[in-house]
Length: 411
Image 1 (cartoon, rainbow, N blue to C red):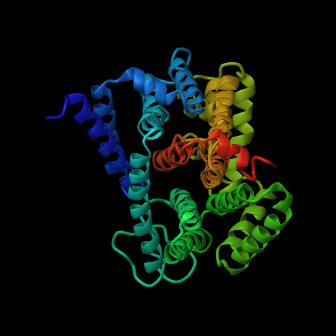
Image 2 (tube, rainbow, N blue to C red; image 1 turned 180 degrees about the vertical axis):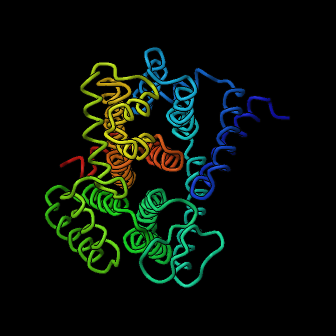
Image 3 (cartoon, helix red, strand yellow; image 1 turned 120 degrees about the horizontal axis):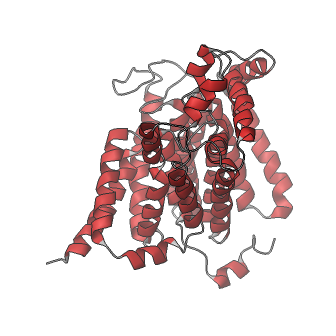
């Protein structure tokens, strides 16, 4: 008979695996499994062991610092308590990341099972995107037929582009690591299909940029610095072909450039982001030291918005996670959120070459998403970014002898 804490820890692990399976296709399922994870993890105890594992990851302290600022921001906020509480729940992903790290950082078997669960769900999403070219699938949110257009399945096109970028990196990792020829080519084909899905079958410019950054970061992390010029040339050719062959990239980029030169309108994409940035920075400079407090953005933006239409368009979030934290938590919020990315890069720096390449690439995806959208605050995107980062950042650290022998370590 198992001891209760052993059973509860196993329940926490199973809940985390189920969460990774749920994240690509169902928000309700992900929330339920994450609630089960928290309950089992808390009841299992073992706090000292959990903390020892958590603090071995460089991102733990910045994540906890960021959430501490969100808690403390309730003391001086101008927002009502219901909004503050909503923000506490929105950003609980930061704490869930730490919990997941305690279960995965020193348990490679569980980490591989989480990868497998995510990959199975993401593969079904990928297959559905391609099938929706010819058939209107009843479970697909996008009902566009033919090549091009929006073929997102369970999530909006921004969230799916994040998930496909992670699947692309997993395919590259498994393909390059495999010693079996057919497995190598099968996983490389998966990576290629995910790349094509993001550049040809989804409609978001954020996805285009994130995919390009992921490919560039992965390739540069894989080759010695002296060969970067060759790698940059190959990546430029690949991305150039993707742009030329895509029926959506050129029109979407052209539209974005057109919007840059026009007076911002609430119905466009680039215009509102420029408007939110302008007035968001105005709010930040009014209170740069501590910000306006947790949840205050929504009301404060409407206070300075020039019309009721702009209030309605921008009061939900400013489409920039860095700006979001700057407005509500001032310079400490900006520094804490930036520290998450710096710590993530530091954590990835000590990994084996393939793990390091995948980690650098997805950190780039999360960074782009945080500059172009409020990815951590939003439910679907937040789960994709946060738990994707956990997967790539809990890879084993390389041994000192391996680090000394690595070509990248030699520069």
